Image (tube, rainbow, N blue to C red; front, side):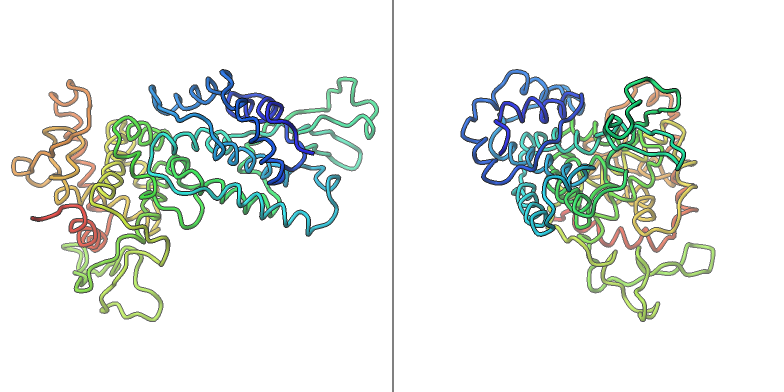
Length: 430
């Protein structure tokens, strides 16, 4: 028997969005969801609208959200059922595994939502899924003669430890980020479906994104100045910002096949050594002299437009600029491996001279490269920054120094490959 919609909103949805203990009850079947939908007036509660708005304002100051509807209710039910599979007492509900498999299929249907290009609807999904991935679990750990006993998100049951109601110095509580904790197999699979339902959440947490996700699915947010600023600053706050940028770039590479006539050039000028024939390197069995055709292993190939692609690339280059302004760029770039996505991310600022006429440069008047500042074109749409820093030229000098550093760090072939893949798709010639 499903709870009424008012109880579901009060015990699960509002704590999820506004904070507080989230109550996970019995699984909700499709028929139960349909029964909830018969009283849609509960979705118009002022407290629910306020909680959604405040959650959205964490990303942008003036969000525009659609009214809650059946689709959003379906998403909430799917998120609730995903948590049910991790409940420590789930076996007390049903014992048969076939029943749980049917529930997993129904929950996956709840989480499989149609794609959208509307920023308001996409933001509404992130309001719920973003709160879902940020959930924490408060565990109680009790020491015993046989070792420690951990109660996942629950208080100590007095039927097992009658003295547990009396405060004990040996008890302790631990707050665990729920998403990074161990999960039941069904939960792990459903988490990927939940993230696929919200491309904006994947864009903000790219290292958590499921296989097959592409930043092009959320490019409309990067084409909006307010959203783009919030997203890039969110990336920059991560101590492992290079890994974040590499994750976004890795998800972008499958949509950038190389032209058939593209051939690799030699190694970095002056070193006399060859480097990767493509960003991902030649596949096994392929000779180094063969012409590469793709930038990465097969993945999600999402159709794109010049505006969508330039929005993603511009945001990634601006991430470099923010770290240059914070004096953290060189340190971050040094702590890199040979991951294809990471190398491509580090190479993006070196491609800027060929893209600046469309993407602009990080600051108006800033040189796009460090070789000939006077001859570098200024982009039409620069990112806003401090006038004092611009007039003094301090940030510009740091940027040029950083580009010199990247030229020493990134194989020249990686840059040439990105130029061949990006420039024809972004800079459209009449």
